[in-house]
Image (cartoon, rainbow, N blue to C red):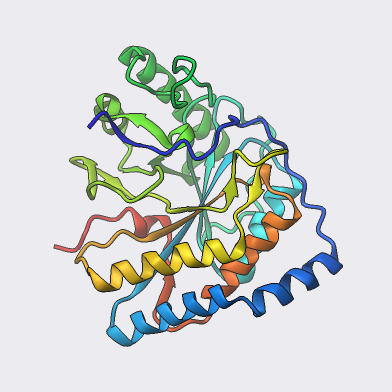
Length: 294
């Protein structure tokens, strides 16, 4: 297998700026749509069936592309606080502002990790995007990952987790030993993981629902709420019908810098859908990337 996973969930690099611009009228309208959604009823039914079957639903949340303080980053922190949903934020170290301040991000809720180096595509034209593809020189890959670690240590101190998130969710397997040798213990991309560990000692935990459609006309747009609910309902059902001792937590992926009003409403609606449902838990990154029970 050439790559751990090459989802290329986003196609535009990391250049989209954030804008939250929430309007009360739009929130009210969106809230009414969510409350009356048949797809939400399907999701909640699956959640209750899993509870009744004694199969826990374990969720986690990752947000990519942090480079600076912004209204979007503030909104992200606010949602994590409101729903008490732990969050892993992936920072692009080679683009991050020296003025980045994460002191307002509750350390018991929000963790940070490395998102590649500079979010630069090195793949040939016409292929899937990747910063660390098969054609990259291993020495260059190691140098960039190491430079990112130094940058994050300077910005975050001990708040950076040893988890590596490659840009575009794409990372060639021939570089996995480099990641492990650099001291990382976790790797996260997109899509159902092919195995529990990318290599020995490097726990693999992916995300499964990107709330944005990257190739939508006019720029990234949110996945329709009903579609998001049905995708999550299918994963919940599959995990109940084929239970595993080391089941992969269900991951939601957001990109705060690319989100507009409807995207924030979608994310809030999804967090609301799981809130207070018995048998559902939101895992911290430490729990997500912990070794399986013996």
